[in-house]
Length: 610
Ligand code: ADP
Ligand code: MG
Picture (cartoon, rainbow, N blue to C red):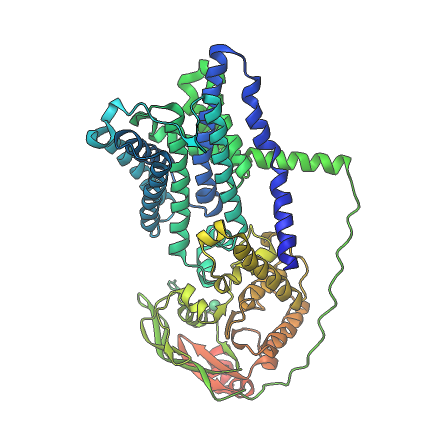
C-alpha cells in the first residue's frame, strides 16, 4: 500500500515536471501578431498538434517496439476520412465519429501487425509502403466513400460541456488537451509491463518469447495503438482544417512522420513532439527552398541516423547533463556493496534427489536438412535434479535446449513435462509452464537496465492488459511494482547490485548473472542453463557455482549444459553425455567421466586406448 502511494506520488511528480511544455504551448497563440500572419501561424500550430499526435504512434511502434512503418499517413488519412464521412455525410455525433475512427484505424493496425509478424524489418517497410499507397489510391478512387479528389468539406468541430469550440484558438487548446491525453497514454505504456514487453521485442525477439512474451500479440498491440494514434491525429487534422482531400495522406507525409519521430528522438514523447514542430515549421521558414524540402528531410534523417541515435532530444539531454556536470558537481554517495555470498559447500556428485520424473524426453530427433543435430535422444530429469548435459562442441546440446524451450520444432519424438506433451509448443507458452532458460550467447536486452531485464522475466506473472494499464492505475501499478521488487530481490539474492546499469554496459560475467536472474525471477520449476560458465574467469566461475547451489537450494530442478568438467563434477546429480547428436553415456558424473566412450569422444581414439 505504502509502496503504491509512493509510486503514485513519484508518478505525479514525474508528470508535473513536463507541465511547463503544454502550458508554454497553450500560451504561444496569445503572443501571435494580429491579422493574417497571426491566423496563419495559428493554423500551423493546429496542424503541428495533429501531426505530433500521429507521430506519437511512431514513438510506440518505432521507438518502443522497433518496428518500421512508412504507413502512418495512411492511418492518419483513414482516421480523418472515417471521422469526416460519419460526421458530415451521416451526421453522426462528433464523439461517436471520433471513436469509430479510432476503432477502424486500430483494426487496420491489427491487420498490418498480423501480416508483419513474418517479415524482417526491410520487408516490413516495403509492406507498409504498399499499404500507404493502396490507401491513397482507394481514397482517391472510391468516390462513393471519400468524395474522390474533391475531398470533404464542412467538417465539424466538437462541443464540450455544451460549449461549441469553433474558433481556431479554442480548437487549438482542445487539440492540445487531446494531445496531452495521447502523450499520457504513450508515457503510461512505457512504464507498464506491456511497455517492457514492447522494448524486449525490439531488443531481442527470441529472448522476449523465451520470457513468456507473445510476439504476435505484442506486435499487434504496437501496430494497433500506433494506428489508433495516427487516426486520432487524422481526426484532429480534419476537424482543424475543416476540409480534407486524399492528396494530403500520401507517402511523402508518411516519410515526414517517420522523420519527426527519428529526428526528434524516436523513444521520447517530448522528442517526437519537437520533431513534429520542427518538420511542420521548417518548410515554412525555408519556404524559398520549397522544392528541396524532401531532400532536406532526407539529409536530416541521414545525419540523425549517423550521428544522433537518440535524436535532437537525446542531444539536448546530453547537453544539459554535461552542463550540470560542469557547474553542479555534487559528490555522489557510493552505493554500499552487498556482502559476499556465504559459501555453501556441496557434496560431490550427489545422488538423484527424487525418482519422480519432471521431464521425459523420448527418442527425440532434430534435423536441419541433412544435419542430424539430435538423434533418438532419451533423457529423464527428476524433480530436484541438477542434470548436466556434456559433450564436445557441435554434439547437439544447445539444440536439445532449443527444442525443449520451443525455439525449434522437433523432427520426431516426444517431450513430456509433468506428464504433458510439450514438443512444438511456442517459447512463450513453454515459459508459462514453468520452464525458463538462459542462452549460450547471452541474450539480454542490451538497452534495458539490469533491473528492467529481470523485470521482463516476471512478465508471465502479470495479467493486466492494455485497458487495465491505461485505465486502472492501481491495478497496473501493483503489477509493475511487484515485478520491480521481485527483480531487485532476485538480483540481490545473486549478489548483484548494479541495478540501473544498461545490460550492454555490464562486464560479461555480470551479464551472465543478470540473465540467470531473469530466468529465475518468475520462480520456474525447471531451469535450463546453456554453458553459464563459458567465458568466465576462474573467480567468476567459482562465484557461479555458489550461485547455482543457492538456486538449487530454492528447490529448482536444473538442466545444465557445461564444458568445464571440474565445475560440473561438484554440482551435478546426474550427467548425460552427447556426441554427434546421440547420447553415449549417462549416470553419475564420476561414472560417465570414466566411461571409455566418453573418453574417446573427448580425447579421440589414440588416447582413449593408449
Ligand atoms: P553444441 O551446443 O553441442 O555445441 P549445437 O546444438 O549448437 O551443438 O549444434 C549441433 C549441430 O547442429 C551443429 O552441427 C550445428 O552446426 C547444427 N545446428 C545447430 N543449429 C542449427 C541451425 N539453426 N541450422 C542448421 N544447423 C544447426
Ligand atoms: Mg552449444
